Image: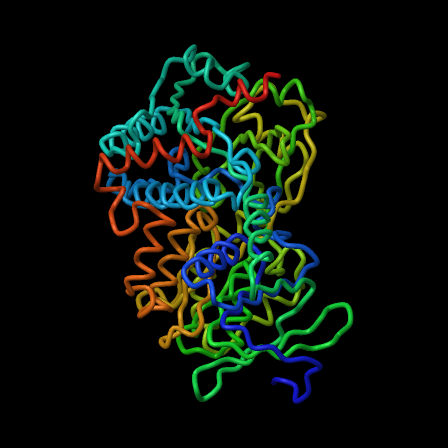
Length: 508
């Protein structure tokens, strides 16, 4: 229940819960669409981007479906579905448009702070996997968003692309790779911080750090009362607002439950922790200049797709391998072990039990991952880098993910490996649940949210005109319009400085 007394009160138009990429994106969009909006942002930690948006806590691939094989699943009859890959590729292009707007309007000083050109590769071995990758390449390159994707089974050519992956590999083993030169690496932490820096300079915007949102209650007039407590002083703040966005990563589900909106009932969460092997040998790091994604092992969940990943974090080149999955009952990296048990309610216990029963292989997989020894992790790395040595790598903890469990009439409950937006019928509250490819498609997700929650304003001539300034392709389909997609990519590549090669950038 809301406490009767509060040391302070405030009444912003908009409340954003969580200081990550989603809140930052929505905040900038809304402030551009209506500069008179007052916005309050509440973050439970003492800095922004400390959870999933932090560069060390996410893949940072710039998920564009160029190399992520889980976005092109193979059905039981052998056919490959590329529809999700096309949708994600289009959404990432929309994100690049918005980021280009931020750069051109000096909201972000330089694109080099957050985005770099890095080729995206898929790599597989074994006869069946080679056949799968070849067919995937044929299907994707039939679409203009994947134009330029190269395919090779030639070991010498693949070695020229990714030498670390080929050195020491069995010469008799069939292998294949695809390469998309247009790939990127995105530091979502740096991008988010730049957007918050901009927001904090705007009239009517306040960022509150170290603030725990304890309760939400909707009033009879449709507005909301949010109770927030300072984690240091324990002083409380009562916030009266017309709109709430819950973008707190793994912490979104408990807050959605507290809101009590009917649309939020029946959702559950399954937390999955992650770890990386981080290379400490600079000589090894310099030999690899790509993001190489493989195929998840048989019986493994989609989020377990391994990758040998060149990253640029705070201006320094890094090399990571993983993720290694694990299990924790925390919903956030800095959360509580009671998060999972406290999230179980009468309205979601059936979907959660059904999802658990239907995903016993996942449970076994996570148990096996938790029990891994350093040698086990090295063995997994050696599949992608045969000559890797354990002394060149350190184990680091990545971010916490909460996969969505939702009601399903047929199964009772299903585990979703994606992003789910939940909005109140009256548009006064929205929450974002789930994980990948969220950050990379954040702009498209937030535009959809605005259309759901600000329907009348979104259709107004003023907002429509502003949308087209923020995202030039707005209202058109990059997936359907070949010429528009080509013009858009040419523009964003120039503005974001993605034409220069990574080798040239870091050879100095």
